[in-house]
Image (cartoon, rainbow, N blue to C red; front, side):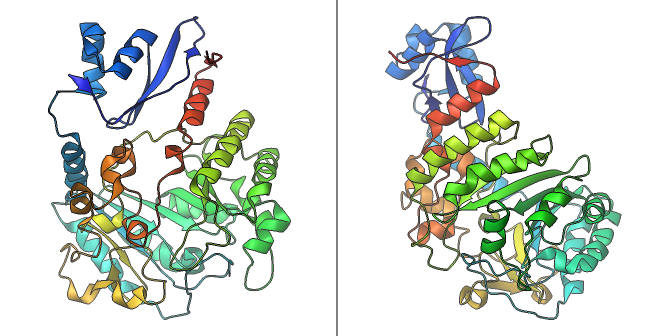
Length: 436
């Protein structure tokens, strides 16, 4: 047995409540965080597993922290990703009931327009998957534009999907400006929306400036007020799009949200750096390492206030994204089918990214292959750096589109891993020991 290339060890030592000293380890192949005693950690560092007791070695093997010598781990990881991507039993539909948005955010690369939606054919496409005996479950991601501008359509379609009687759940990404307590209840109870992502970019004045509604009104108070009435069972992620303009105010925002009672179960914080969406954001975007350093500070502060957030991924990637599985697709209001969610609203690729139309697809037939369905071949051939990364099992490469456009979309935990080990230890009640 040898150490897995996908095992990461903390440099720091920690002491638990019982006085035991250990280092933290993270098996990316299992998305599992665990503790190892200093002797075992040293043996893993040195590659001399003869110093590890047999029962400990067996435990490490179960975690895939150690693997048989000669195993091609990259091939195994890619095989797992391919298996998830090729699983015809899980169908994922990203549905856009409208292309219009009631906001005009300065960093947004989307182009919004008012068009007549033709959702009957789109709904029939989802229903065909729900009726297919080979399909075990169906997931719908409501997307836009701003999907809540078409709430009536979402309610009507959701009723049809829920009636099918097959395991079904939905998520939604929304700017939150149209949320109310009653709307949240409708989404959860009628539409089976279990997870909501809402964007808040800063304290009231800054948020309302950055995420300006087309009518000139702000949305901060409306969003925060609504989020105080989240139904039990719904998980809300508060996304903070960060660039040079609002980075100095993120900590203030976190404190304000906590003061408004949002640091509670069911709500998680998810700061993310602003990145190109077919547009040039080079003047405002933060460098990856600069962002990761700031993010660690924000998460530490958020944790002290009681906010939930992911210290490290707790699941391996089933598939990299919708663009790497023909069993996942994006459908716009006109019934055009895309393989990538960054295509329907971006000028140029809005036309070139179309892989089919709903009228051209029979029943639950998978969509045709798109521009990124060869992603795993790309990684295996060494055309992308992801093949050398120890976090590939939980990242999957993040975004094939950005890689091929020359942007490295590596997740922040790649650059602030030591801080995340510290955060994980603090959650366990462990104390970091002084170095040296």
